Amino acid sequence: MKTLEHNFDLCVVGGGMAGMCTAISAARHGIKTALVQDRPVLGGNASSEIRMHICGAHGKNRRETGIIEEILLENYHRNTGLNYYIWDSVLYEKAYFQENLTLFLNCTVNKCEMDGNKIISVTGWSLTSETFHVIKATYFADCSGDSVLAPLTGASYMLGREAKSDYGESIPPEIADKKTMGMSCLFQIRETDHKTVFIPPNWAYVYENDAPFAHKGHDENSNWWWIELGGEQDSIHDTEEIKHELLKIAFGVWDHLKNRGDHGFDNWELDWIGFLPGKRESRRYKGKYVVTQNDVESEGRFDDLIAYGGWTMDDHFPAGFYHTASHPTIYHPAPSPWGLPYRSLISENIENLCFAGRNISVTHAALSSSREMATCALLGQALGTAVAMAVKDKCNLDKINVKELQNKLMFDDCWLPFRKRKLNSITSEAVVSHPVLTNGYDRPDENGINQAQLRKGEKVVYSFDSFKKIKGVRLVFDSDLNRPEKNMPYNFPLQIKGYKTPKTLVKSYKLIFSTPDGDLEITENDNYQRLNFKYVDTEANKVTFIPLETNGDEICRVFAMDIF
Image 1 (cartoon, rainbow, N blue to C red):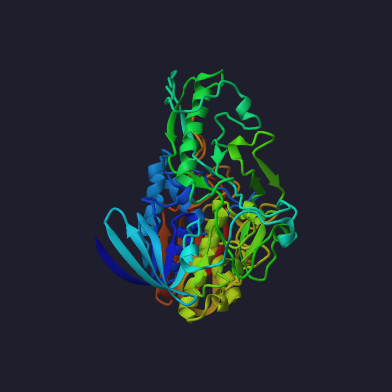
Image 2: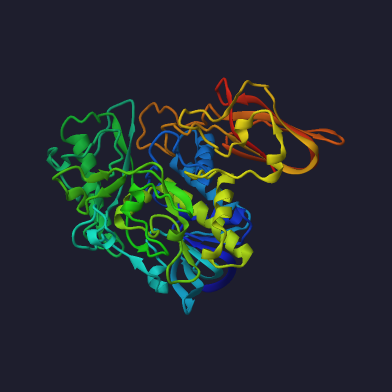
């Protein structure tokens, strides 16, 4: 056994989509960051160990952008065979090779050193290297989902369903309880060109008819999310017991579909089954503000809005699989988008503790919308950016300039509803040939336009009345925010359409800087990302952008161009 000590500006505990985006964002904004994950892979519920596809806000042009969109587009580019282990590698490389970010995998945090209401360090045990890692930091972000730092630090937290009267909500029960939404062991199937055989284990449950599956869709378009248990037990401490029961059900469900009745699965085989349950709900921190059902329904128009949701309030019955009276969940309506406030990411009683993901400061009812992974990713990027500001400004988390945070997020392509991105001074001084590129809204409007639609070779020109010191150009292209594909498919039919770099993206382009010494040209020939930064160190009185090719579309679509 050995012990290693480390010092960071920020320690992020939990490597799901929220934790990843927190750590990556903080590191990109220049602070020394640790990301501690208790599994061998990143992604949490989206990883190869659980395989839940990433969902987020409903509605036209509501897809989440920023780091989460960057990751999805990277996967479309590299993972053409839709292999879950390549997806794992995409997540891994985004964190492991990020400057200012140190990754600790297979490391379980089980101890905290406190000084009053401030965390001094956390200690994690690395199973594979038999090493204790003592990590000191200025700030700690718990993105673990289960809020693992709460019982170790004395941080205020909530668990279960509030009573209707607690926050004046209509969704909760009359009397508060400790019941939660459950967890699921998913499985995936793959179609073949021949009939296949499945022999179930003798410990699997036997379902001779469809009666247990009333109100539960079970065709090849399902990801079997309703194989769910644990809401009536302890969703943390009973996890292993619940997992064993879920596996009996999961193998029994596939045996039923394959062997007991004509369900159309003759040529399908079981490709994978999860032995790690995916969780929906456990501890939620109590923050400086608790977001409620009423906030969701009123669109969350907070002054400190830093992310948005847009999934319905999807409230699963605690009995899960054994709830047979109706559909296993109630989809309470929610607007899309609705805003989430920065205050809900900061602990009410631990000075340097913050959080992002499904464990933020929300009621059970609000959680049923905010828990989606794309929403959690936005929360993570916002939190990482905020902590970097606090470190640089040497101030408490609740003292940062929130308007500056909002503009930084929008500049990093995290769209914020009800907000307009403020242009920097040099872009504001330019005479622009296509003014739509500087209106501060970097996605389609309600008419689906709000973009420069250019012919290949058509010039966009930014002119200045004198030579300006220029560090680079920011470009936002169209990645088709209405594409139906998630990050990975539910199941694998013989032919899968989509899941490739969107044809709307500009693939190659040229930037020309008119300098005192003549033209300086930068060319990109293989772009597959929505957000592009091209860096230079020059003076110019004109910058010209010329799109040369797309990934398949006839029109070159550009939302924004900024000079910085």
